[in-house]
Length: 227
Ligand code: SF4
Image (cartoon, rainbow, N blue to C red; front, side, top):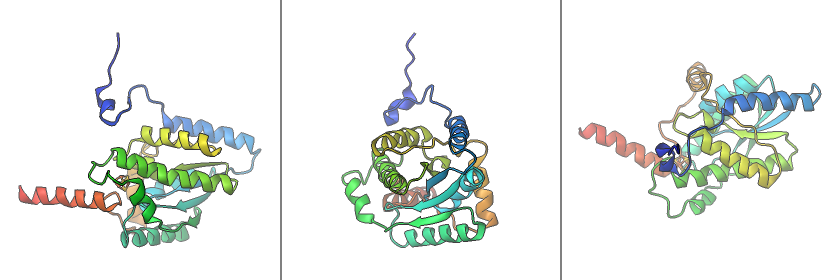
């Protein structure tokens, strides 16, 4: 009998039988440690913001020597600086990782997403946005000799870990550097990020990051007010 995955059709991929990315991460960590013969492997972790990174860093800090890459050309001006300052503060308070800061590069985001401005969150614009950020992370990881790279984005309940991992795998193959699979939502990751954000008094935004997601969030709030 042929099973058709209707949910997957919405975003053009099938969500049935998808791998357990959290388990994959755990076996990849074990393999990397074996390969390094006792030394900590070096991880370049793309971070979208301080609250999301907090639980990912806490989970990985004993297994890796971590550098956070803050590359988010999607985040609109003003908001970008606030989120970056919070990222720097979290790392200076915890000492869980170094930071590699990049230029804002917002023009790259607008070029990549041209014509997709009005698409809903989770669609083709977001795929471009993920790819843009992961490509840069992979390039830096390859250039600077990291053992692997990954992203904090899989902690978000709003983001498909499957799409993110598939994107990461493809980019890793192109750039010649290992992708560390993840699904940071698992094992209570998202709730832990909320707790850590509270403990450190971190600014937590109420929209994804680009101006299009802010306008969509504002429209949703307005619609609720108008009811
Ligand atoms: S909604 Fe979020 S993931 Fe999608 S394009 Fe905007 S910032 Fe990127």
